[in-house]
Length: 308
Image (cartoon, rainbow, N blue to C red; front, side):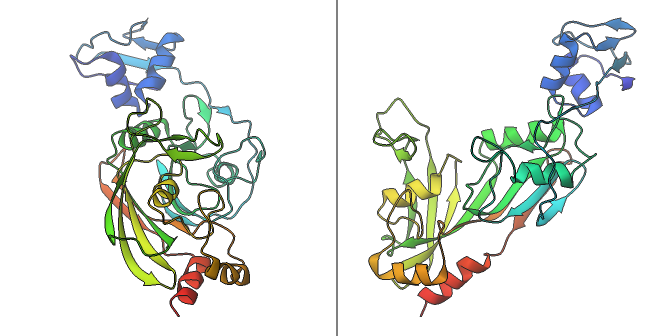
């Protein structure tokens, strides 16, 4: 990879702008001695550039990811050379881990994006910048390039990404709309669960969810939850904390007694939660993009049955 640089910039930023690589990736290549400017190997990422200086970057082929590419069907909402937005079905794990070594979204993306992944930090892999639970359905954006991964991660870190979930919760929230705020961290009672921690806790992370009741149903309600932050199990934990756990959530609450026969009859055995909308600035073009995913059939059926 070759080109010329503008003047007066930090070398890592100028090279990132010129090459499409992330600054972290550029720094790594500089430390490996793979970058030359005007024919000389450079060692300092913070050095200032001279106008018109010629650069060369020796980018090694991306290393293959240990995970296996698998032909798993994907519902692709949007895709370009830089990123892909998918509508994940309930039951699909996002990332391989102990207990789920394959059959995940990452395995599916490795097959779908074969030959298109330029490498995240030198590894040919999809850039997972956020996750949704196995039994939650809905929208997920994944980076295909180093620069897209860095740009999306920055937006998640500064909370500029917009996300809205649709959920069916037990009971009727009162007031019907409001904001739930509280630090979320590992539960003291059960380390496998998350919990809203005391305000003076030194653990956990600040979390804010804005909710609005969209429809009152029999012993439950359809609510929209807009995330100001994105913490593990945030919607599930916050709704449970105000006494309205999600229907079907075996971890954070109990389905009302009167609705249990219905859920058994429908075979509804997951938390009633769907990532319905996702919006962000495209990390490469800067264009604002917004996506929506309709409720899946199992949640539509649950809402129809409880509306009677």
